[in-house]
Image (cartoon, rainbow, N blue to C red; front, side, top):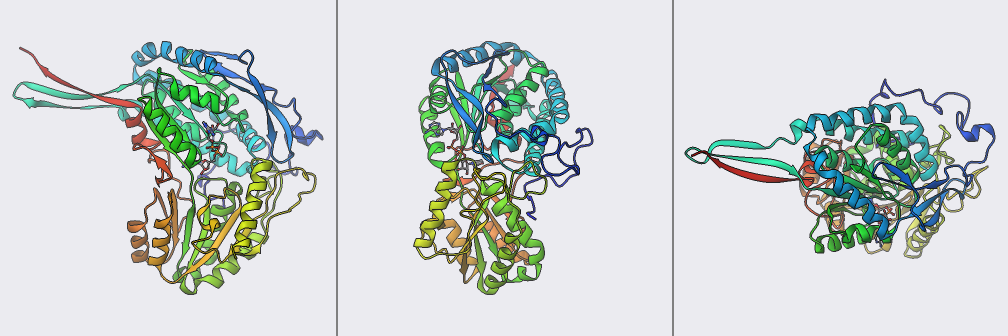
Length: 529
Ligand code: NAD
């Protein structure tokens, strides 16, 4: 029912193995649950430890935190919360690995990634299932996430070309040549959010390591399971010890990374307050930082798009309710212009009623649970607060119950009409399947309202008019613009970040920006006497 606009539109990769859940056999076919076991058994994934210097371990004395399957509210793993001492062990291992890795020719570094890519493809569906179990998103969405992760590896395989510098004979003066060479800096770290357990680290990891740096990944403590499997594949790919390290944990772990003098740069993705904190603290310690924050993305529907609603509405639903609204690119506000309101609202609500809610491993499910009980409660409070300020719930997803998963953190699709700019709901990042709707008089009013927001991650317009689309693209201050596309998700070879309070830094993730972030330009002026 939901168009998963974020997902790959290309057919599945032919080298990927068969899907264990995509075939007939009903929900949950092919997994443990199919054998009648309860998903979320606490022993299912055991203790998630660290991968440091080519070895797995659970750091001594580390506090263990339960990790829950959000569809069942049962702990299915425990994650080790790394201390500053453990972080230091990882940064030292990464530093020790740096000189030899830097001297490894770029084409040889790429060969490790060729192998890694093949292993990711061979284990593609297994990892997608882990994402669904740990995060709750549908299996289709998890596959889309994995596809985007793999694509970043594919792009980084072009490192010998991507990393080239440039030179100019007689560039400084007659008989004095000048070159700019790209050089890696040392140890980098990525601090990642819960909502894309596999994809977000890949906005950085392949580029950092292919350019000759060594790397540490700190996943979200809420979803550590998939990254452990991915690091097993990193190990199988034969990367030298210390080149890639996995350190699990929470705030203490993050602070240790921010303060460690070995770490040259930090890539962060998460909420805006934490992004700002990371940016300030890492920069104060002399590191380069790219810190991507939260969002409040608007979808604008012009009257000339009303005849196209049959195509636009599934797209709007995909943007708003895909991954239960837990994407930084999620459509959170729907702004109908002039007389587009009634038709658009009616069509959105009618289609939303058909969304099937349940456990994400069931291929017939469109909408899984949100990440945690506290997220569910927070979203419920956001809806109640919106109502208290005068917004009208046309569709209310609170108190949904899913048979067999009564304890899961489910919130159904929710549509609130009359969400005016002064209301908290118009400003707050809900990060759940909640769509606020408002009517504006003109396209310019929509643009002004979007630009008044402290966030600037994404904005989309549905229209048949090229001129209106250009006006929107030109004037909206947001890092990602969709024209008749609800989720403006750029591909691996394009940069990705927001603007305003959605991003702290200069160079974005992915593509050429990532190459710039993970290298310095050394200029050589050369004269032979
Ligand atoms: P979060 O900010 O709570 O956590 C992100 C990471 O920071 C985690 O690894 C966590 O352990 C760590 N962390 C959390 N609080 C910290 C603190 N006080 N000090 C140090 N470290 C801390 O974000 P989340 O809830 O995991 O992810 C959802 C958020 O991420 C949403 O706001 C979403 O919009 C945003 N997001 C943004 C993008 C983007 O590209 N702009 C992409 C994905 C998600």
